[in-house]
Image (cartoon, rainbow, N blue to C red; front, side, top):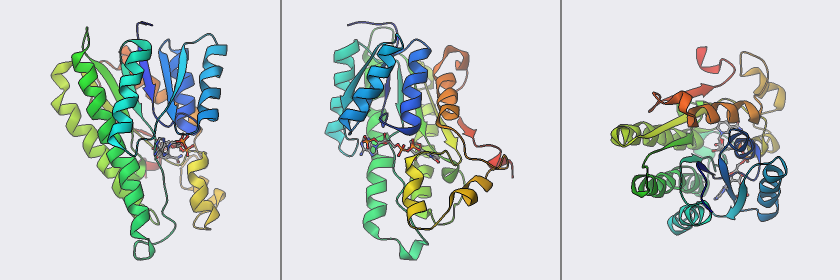
Length: 252
Ligand SMILES: NC(=O)c1ccc[n+]([C@@H]2O[C@H](COP(=O)([O-])OP(=O)(O)OC[C@H]3O[C@@H](n4cnc5c(N)ncnc54)[C@H](OP(=O)(O)O)[C@@H]3O)[C@@H](O)[C@H]2O)c1
């Protein structure tokens, strides 16, 4: 099947990725919904189709290079090309101060949050360069924790600093190839990712809400809308930017 604009969203079974898939479909993109959980991913793709959009679920684990390469290849096999990629799959496992964190948790976050994004960009960029009418837009999920320090999240923060570095550097490298590469830096958004820290007692919901000057957590749709704009022609002169979607967090 060939369609005019094809978007791939990793980690689209829940949270920000799910809402991004729905928003990109509303904006007219055919969407590949990806993630490891098949039932949840199929449900998101079905919701898009029920709303009149084009979508399919492709199961993929971003923890291996082969898995990510196969996901990009399967996307192109399904819809014929790749125009927008959102590297959203991510995990947050810290529960305390740096000296108490097991190395294994940091290693797991480095694999998913950093290598997963690197492999994503690597195969997405190769495809965007190779296809007829080359070019595209890539949006990576950074974080306000990737633009400064964050207590009880040193390892997660380090991985998101890496995402910011990958994003800005790749944007410079592919600026003349019509591939725009940007990131979004959300503050606390009410999704499952916060559950590890809340369950461990590191944070409670009211304390998390109060971190933002607006005194609430963000909604996944509020990040999805920013990503959809970065993917759109309205953002044609925007590359190498990390856009804060943070209820004023970084203005403090
Ligand atoms: N919520 C926040 O406060 C916040 C703030 C700043 C940045 N972010 C970033 O936003 C992104 C989305 O997080 P979220 O808040 O929406 O959390 P979420 O609801 O927990 O979603 C995370 C998604 O990542 C997927 N995922 C995790 N590991 C994966 C793997 N190895 N391979 C493929 N998919 C994987 C999960 O799907 P499966 O389990 O089905 O694979 C899930 O769909 C993350 O990169 C996160 O760091 C979130």
